[in-house]
Length: 378
Image (cartoon, rainbow, N blue to C red; front, side, top):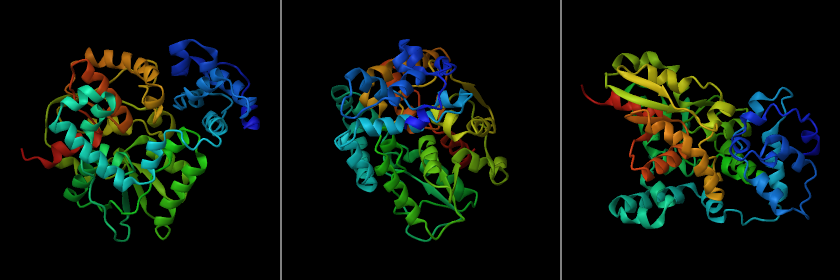
């Protein structure tokens, strides 16, 4: 970690691009400040202010995108958190237990979602976590057969919380005779474990996925959630990991003539993980632009991040809410019919913040809007 930290020349060009520095104006909440803290980090003597500074990082990697020295800040902060949490296997214990049991977790979430919809009072009494459950639904059916040329990656918590998007993509594929299979025995991508510095745990999860598809070196792994895509690409170079909008754009000849018009004003919010890690930021906008009678409006990013950032919204909820505030304000002024985003965490966080303002706009993956117009009869 010291060698990586020494690559930073402390120029400060990253500071205006860091959401937490822009929010607080505190040098210790900037990439430069956190690198300085990581450089001398000692697991046996960690001051509370140092821990707070390092753990409050969003890991959005906006600093990496503008760094002239190409400092690998993401790796530095992951290593620093590994030092901070050395021997502390209890960090977010329930979440980490759930990540290792994706099938059971998806079932529990879908049952919780059903309860939240039947008894809306639950969401008022139990707070944001219960309101998130309103998005949970039964996961798509997984198949045990050998891989098709393209395999759908459904993740762990997204298996239930983003099941609408998974189902939409599979329905589009079936309608257009595209070979896409949601293969069984999938593990978590490891992104959430990396967020809390549990790198060994993340690598173990990645190894499980690689082992499951060890005989399928030529498949395309299609994923909808931007954080999952970034983590899968970091974990393996053997499989080609493709973002779902790009996968559909590459095959638009099979569906574009079948899309029916449906007028709608859709606000597009681009997650940090898509902008700074996945790349190909134009794919969601290009997909939505192919939908007749749809007006696509970019949503201002405020401080540059909505604050969801994996488990950050659970660990630093006040900061997460403050980061979301300017984005919610922008949405309220735009007269939208719906919101599109390619990250399930962003979708849940923004929908929950909007609901507290009395706004119930649907927040969906771009693929779901295509399915609406392709699968419905005129």
